[in-house]
Length: 221
DNA sequence: GACCAGGCACATC
DNA sequence: GATGTGCATGGT
Image (cartoon, rainbow, N blue to C red; front, top):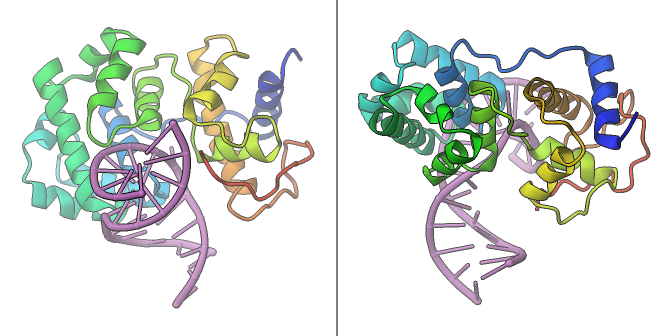
């Protein structure tokens, strides 16, 4: 195999098989989930999304105009409910205002322009933006998260101080631009991260059979 | 009861 | 520019 990033991908893919991300029914639902899952376990996000679906609020127009207090109550299970209600609403209002309520319009501008617009919005940082672009828009935008940082830093593959874009570049520089692979790759990293790279080291049985250099380093910056 | 989870914004030095 | 802190629920 030609490089480490490819090698890791092959190992994970062989061990776990396809992950079938993102767990959502529509692009908008992907975006809603991306905002709700910030620093939050997915199970809690699902509760919130179920409640939004029951309230028929999984459209940009509905989210943009719903009463803020009502939205807060619905997303409460996902935590940070005041912030997240605001973020969902401002994101939806942006879609309605700038793109006729459709994510398609956002994505049609291309990755770079769409990403820039997303990053202007309150509560949408690099990971949330990349998740929306990759999983809702199927655009080539590699997603980095805390597990990605832990795995690379614990193995000593990247500098401890590396930030989001250095981590992202580590992958992008080694991989062909392949949306489908990047989709699977991030999902696989979350999978192996949950099982073997939590705050406490659980390296037994990890499909990445490499020697750790810094077993307990968890910082992202 | 402490600790953690698929981040981000903002204040302060 | 870098470090620190608030945000909040639900599971282990």
